[in-house]
Figure (cartoon, each protein chain N blue to C red):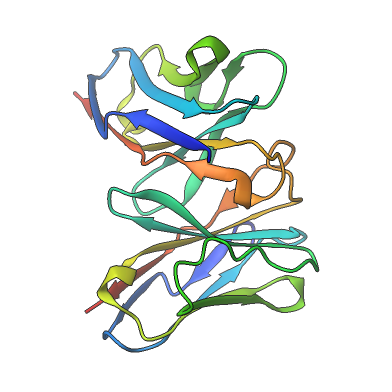
Length: 116
Length: 115
């Protein structure tokens, strides 16, 4: 597709269940980012992939959160044993390269997660 | 640590009036600065960015922002508001110039346009 694609667009899950959120970046983009957007909290960086380098996981809030990127393209963000505080919009973004000064970061529409 | 402060979680202006959304950053080194807009149920879209060079940056939809080092500010303006400008606006800053680990967002300002 022309833009960053995320699925599901909406997910309601029960507390304690695991969820997987998928991101298809723009074709050819080597950099991929996950952010979390909570009400009134702005955007919180979660994880960053650049090419074949080891991902920057410094933003993951707990060990219940993990992400992988297969074949340098599609990425999956997994949240295990979900908690109510995990309810948020999870945004994926991609860019042609890793330099934020020289490359525009394109965002997907997000996956809205509600934990009940 | 880098930080971004957006003054006012909500800003309301009349259609046709000046739009001013404030953004201040903390830094001891020159930053890269960005404004993003998020329309309802959509992802973020880059409005404009400052990296180097001219401090007055023009973006899409008639928006512009000026980098003022002495004030550590990067306020977003538009001379005449349009109803379609109603959205959430995010200021962001990066110092590393490389990778999303250096991109820090403010908490956002919700722009309301009164008819």
